Image (cartoon, rainbow, N blue to C red; front, side, top):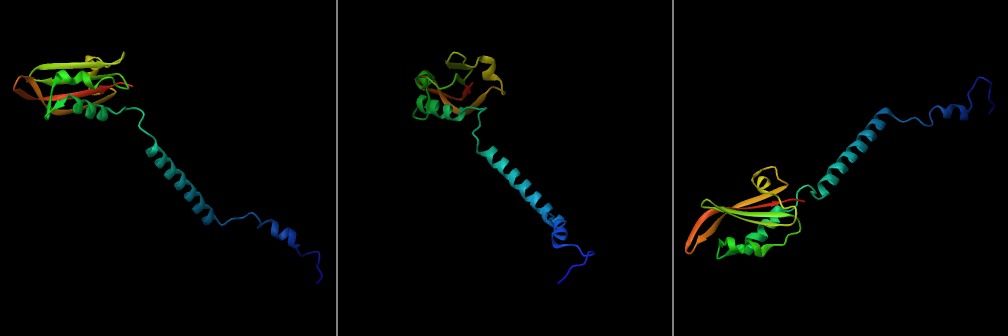
Length: 146
């Protein structure tokens, strides 16, 4: 076979088509990569521990377990649950009386205990011993600062 000067050679003809990709295939590839990155970001965010709020619920469970005798919280036993890992304030409110235990140098103060936006707050209703043979409903609250 002979070539005439008017015909394009195979090297020149292939160079225009060499790096071309169908537009639809490129769009699908970009969408797939974007979806994969988005999914990765969501999964990674869910997998990281919540560093903003220490385990107030865990501390509350520990305090309740320690201070409870026969299903009734004895405020005199609150100190037995200390020390805590983070500065913590434990309060029991019942029948107009408040018992408080603070643990740590920077334990949350009275304003932080009453504020809803404190670092970490957990509370639950409990039965509290207020005197010999006298039990009333009250609230056990734990505030933890990190």
